[in-house]
Structure formats: structure tokens, C-alpha cells
Length: 215
Image 1 (spheres, rainbow, N blue to C red):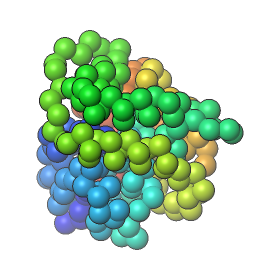
Image 2: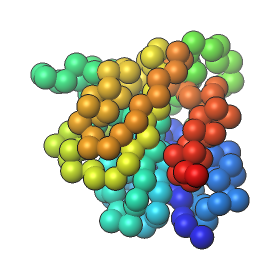
Image 3: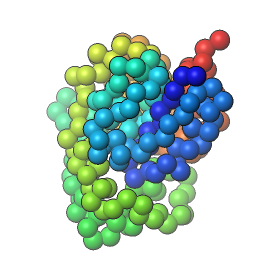
């Protein structure tokens, strides 16, 4: 049985990606891993296929294991922060402000973040801090510095991209950039925001299974 590794994004725990793993267990040996754990190890374990997104997508592209034959990137980017020549990113001052605020009120930072994740849907649940503020800040520091644009054209495996046209975390232009620079990619854009796995789970998983298990 082939293996699939599912990696969560920033501030998301295993519970956020467990439904994806459960939907693939009938065909794959599933391993779940938080983006925070990957960041600590600076290594992605061997897997035949990887399903991930956001910060996890950056980590997967940066540390792609040779064993990986297919990659699914949900709401991902090659560089999180905007810079000269790359407008489809977040301004670095937003991340720097979040790092400062994590020391004072981590719950407020997470609630604001998850409101943007779930936009355009209303978000009412009060986020609990499951990682320490220091771990969350380390993730933001990684996002400030991460840039895999030079590596993207060397990813010679099929990649399935999903993105939301209304994404407030990572602009849709980031997925279009990836699609234009990856050697072998497909892009599906939903009329939605960043939290595609939460709001379009069944159609997206149907397409993921078709991509990973073609007839």
C-alpha cells in the first residue's frame, strides 16, 4: 500500500487534517503531521504522495522527499510575503505585527487569523491556543523568510493546486504563479476563501482521489 503524508498549515493541529487522512485510508497508509513539527525538524518524512497547504505547502516544496511522486497543494504559495517582482503575497508588516501581538494576546491573533481563513463565511468559534506563542511565532518567522520560487521549476512531479479566488491569507495570484512555473500542474480555483478543506471538502476530496488514483 502506498503512503500519503498530510501536513497541516500554520496554527492548525492534527484535528484539522484528520478528515483528509480518513478519506484516503482505504487506499493509502496515512501519516498526519503538523506544519509546526515539520518546521522543527526541517525535514519532510518519506511518502509516496503529500497533501498539504499554506505553510505546509512551503515546507513540502522546500523539503520534498525523493520518494514523493505526486503533490497536492491547497491554498499554497512559493513565497508568503510580497516583494519586488512578486505582488501575490502578504505585506511583511502584517506578520511582524502578529508576532508582537502573540506575546500580549495570542487568542486575539488566532481569532483574527481564523476569521480570515473562513472568510467569506462567518467565524464564531473562539480559537484556543494549542501551540505555545513561541511556536506560533516561529512559524510566522519562517513565513517571513520563506521563498521557494527558485526551487519550484525543479519540482518534476505532477502537482494538483487548489485555491480560493477570495483568499485573504494568500492571494489567488500565488496559485496562478505556481501553476505557471511548475513543470506539471493543474489548478482548480473555487469562488471562496482560504479554508477550502473546511467548506468544499467533498468535491475537493473527490478530485484529490481522482488525481492520486487515476483510472
